[in-house]
Length: 235
Image (cartoon, rainbow, N blue to C red; front, top):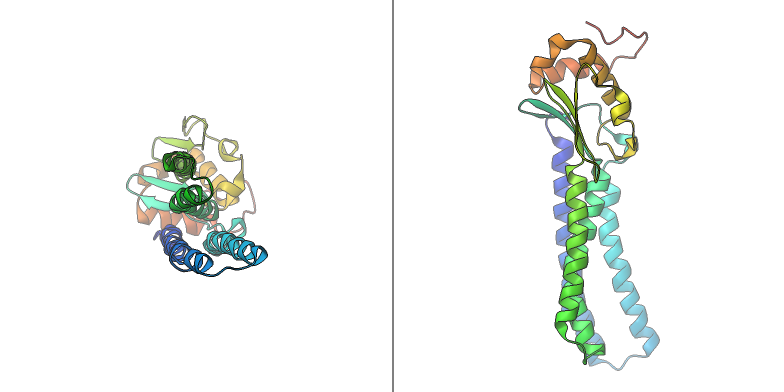
């Protein structure tokens, strides 16, 4: 994970999902709805096609989410950034909330058209406002989840939650229990993260090198060994 390959995969899946959503919504607006308008289909056929379009939308959200690494494939390694190691939020959660936010933004024109068609007495601004509020809320949630991470710096262990305030712990007081909540939400193997925290708490001589590729290579090689004794991570 030190080369950021997992993070690049998350961005790639979200981008691919956005393209898929655009194609699906465009198909619905440019082909499906004109086809329904041009043909006097039975109501059950019209309803079935609309349900199929909605199902296809959720499939478009689900495919990138399913392809993202899940809790069982959490890497044993950090993202390396200057001056820090980063354990981001889980890839699958980041992709899923991103896809939902994109889908809600894409559905705003659909809401406007539907209200104009079935509720002509309503102003289209009602649909625009309602859609924008829902999409903005989903975007805010997605942004908070993307910001959820654990940072290891030479001075402190920093824990950023989704809604919880940020906590910065000096290494002398840092413990694995600080990151024990919701391990499935972490984008790093829970045991690896706990052992890394223990290692830097017990070995201050290595903290200054946090944030360098060389230190990350040393740390991952050390912590991927089986833990046999309480001193197994000492060097």
